[in-house]
Image (tube, rainbow, N blue to C red):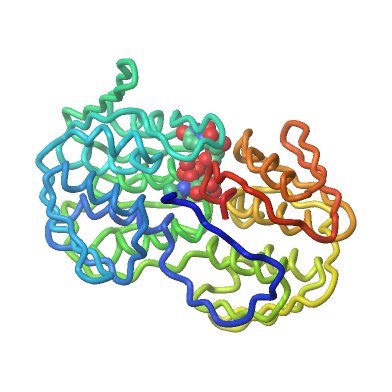
Length: 375
Ligand code: UD1
């Protein structure tokens, strides 16, 4: 059946993996391309469903967006202030396409975003920030209508929680707004730094990404650019966990070790040998690994929620006990019953999973409910 994977386990993993561009960077960059008057070229983009959904959103807004080999070109000339509803509903990141359209056209209409089912995932921080910049927000059933008849203006905004998406939305709203915006309590994820670099390469004036205060001086116009998005630290982490769990020697290239420092520390705690230099990370995993005592997901530079499922899977096949605490998304343990079918001994109470390592898992027929849990 389409979408099924058949995996024969029990063999060590050996070799080199070159990590592709980060989905969580490419999606906001594609949204940002709506702000530019000219052509944006994103280099070496992975062909993922969410990327294609983003192209549908761009085309629906009146832009020419297409693949050229593994690059994407976007001729940005948005004329339609409505996001294609089916595509918008498919992907939570569709919310990122709203602020640029609002900035350029003064109005945008969308349906409330979908995405992996990993908890409530509200958008209140996006909307209250936009309101501070002069937007009016109206919800009608599942429809969301944003207007800014007098255009967007700069503001001093403090986020109550460092939401990645809200930081990106407000950055996108501010870059061409009238005046200066200060965004406090911003998310510090590397993908925010990539977005800043991209916007500045187009002529934006953004500083401070990577810290919790971002300052944006609004500019009149952004120009076209050719840009190579950052590599996927979550995918790199996923391969490192796979190598750790299966044993063997794997080299992961393309990702800066400082973007996954805590993960490397946790893998060393398991008993893996890690050697990291420049953009190369080597992992060697031999024999029985020990559980981590505790892993707790946090906004960057804490342990990423997008690697929580992979960490639990590894710990399930180690020896000892681990506590895994999920602080970002309340229902992100939905994959646990699937791991239990493979022999894992895990008990979930609220936001905490108690893992008793069983040393080795066995094959089973399982279902992937969300992207990272599936991995
Ligand atoms: C992004 C990533 C996702 C990752 C997550 C956390 C993309 C496309 N997706 O998702 O892979 O798991 O960061 O690192 O980059 N929240 C609110 N109100 C808001 C916005 C968020 O309460 O307005 C809450 C969410 O419900 C959640 C937490 O903040 O509990 C984190 O969400 P956020 O950082 O916004 O994640 P996303 O941007 O959706």
